[in-house]
Image (spheres, rainbow, N blue to C red):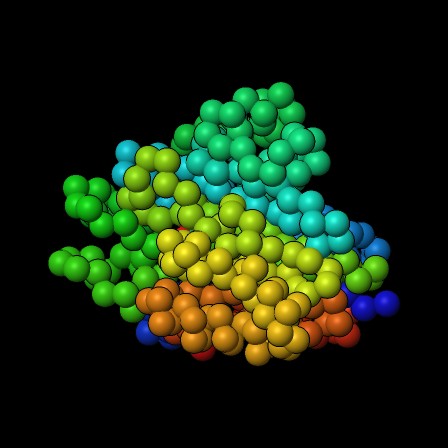
Length: 316
Ligand code: ASP
């Protein structure tokens, strides 16, 4: 039986001009490690939902990505994280929003899905639930990252909110083409044909206290349904929320009979562009069709499947 795993580490203005050889190697190794961990689960006959969590945990532990350890700073200089997980076999879902000091937000999202009786927990309620479930915590300094701190210091006295920017073009207004989104995500199909999707993020640098993006919102940044597809998004969350991106791709497949690739293209390259939204998504269906679709110049991404196909890429 066949299985597949796709991951992303954010989309945006990612070109050879902003990456040196060492950075390319670091990103490549980070993505490969996540793919290997998820692949191991799938190759042993494990469930797609567990493969998604295994892959995302690795990305959350890697400070290169804007999730978990590498989460960006809010207006108040804190790290507030969002994450979601969805099981395409039964449409079960769990999300958390605005959590602090949680080492692996995706693990807490799984706990919400399995043990809370709810879909989305936020802030202090999510923190209390995490404590009761024995979820691993980490102190503030675990999340401290000099590069992201400097990004925030440059704009903390402005009204800008910034999407995990490269940090070298911040004076004056920030051109949309310089945005880089470091959110992470994974989608998988296991040997039973079950789909799953997950997304984890620190959101946007200098975001307001309490701001929640698309990542933890089922149907916007994250969605999975065995009948259609599994999707994880990255990009300017406000636009992805307004366009209900992930569920829109699924709807185009379910109600209009579009192929996975065509549905992704309509949403990301047409509808989202018209709304002014930049970013992308990873998508997979139960027949092994997959797509990396983005309207930005690049997206950190990778895939590995049971046919022996394996790749990591950054640029468009
Ligand atoms: N979509 C995320 C958010 O708006 C940001 C990202 O993809 O990097 O919170």
